[in-house]
Length: 290
Length: 172
Picture: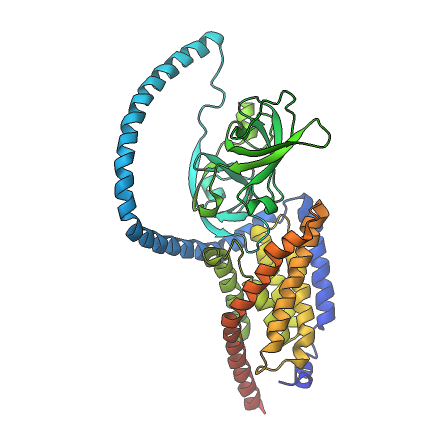
């Protein structure tokens, strides 16, 4: 089709230049408005929730089914071996458990004595499946198949396999967006479990290629922190519940200012193979209020 | 009307594919950018206006699901669609060189813009790392996917244009 013909047909409509200008202004307005507030989130999230999410849900369910079938076939042999060793482990753990039960009983009694509540005993959790991942290659954001209908709210913590995955950053009726801690723009206030020193854990795209993320601003003048130490979420974080495992220190060095230390840690969660997560439905604010 | 419905379906279909299936075929953690293929090819096949509109909606979807705030992806994609539309005058369906060159340039531009806006402004200055590990692999992988995706888009577009031409002739 020649351009001349096309021009005639579009003669009475809006020229491209003006359309571009109008949509540019719309985009800038949207950016300004949504940068600070959440006004558009609920209507927009609801609409796309019903338009896109059911399909994503179906496809990921189907994909999951296929990959489970394939895995089943290849893994039967390894599973048999594993089963054997796990049985042994169960026997060992049962024994250990009995000892720990006794210890716990004692601990509770001692706690009662010093009138210390079990402040963060058990959080309520709900399971969710990852149905879509970030379309780009820059950040690690993903979508899960539960939303406000299941009681999910923004800022809820997301864990998997005993480690911190991230937090819910936006919700729709049947889906929510999770920003993971390995995302380059994420910062988590954390502490060393051994020394209770506070630090900041930040996602880093550069280090993530090696499977690590970075931490900084660790004040450890005594030099007690070593490689392999556990890092957990701190008490002073306003979004993250305390004492959730983040990862293990793999590299530590003193900063140029000689006061703080920074380095790398390996996350406890295997972010490459993540398909199911647990959302903690207790919010930090509410836990503290109670 | 048929064109509008098909285009909307195509955009949604590609977005869903991009966010679900493509995660499984990522190479070294890099996913090809099929949304860019669509935006760019509709731009040079159909002209500026369709490039703008399709870029806007592709970007908006990405914004809603994965952005921190709305509008930025939409803006980037929209301008890429618009600039590709500038080339619709020298586009011929038989020629494969122009589409490939445009799509790879679009994807590289998108990568650079994204790096500058989201990473350089936050003090991540190691450009060579990001270029070699994210921007370039994504562009190469995208151009590889183009070889499979672009003929389908071209076919759909040609069928639709045939149909439109025929219905136009009926009126005359």
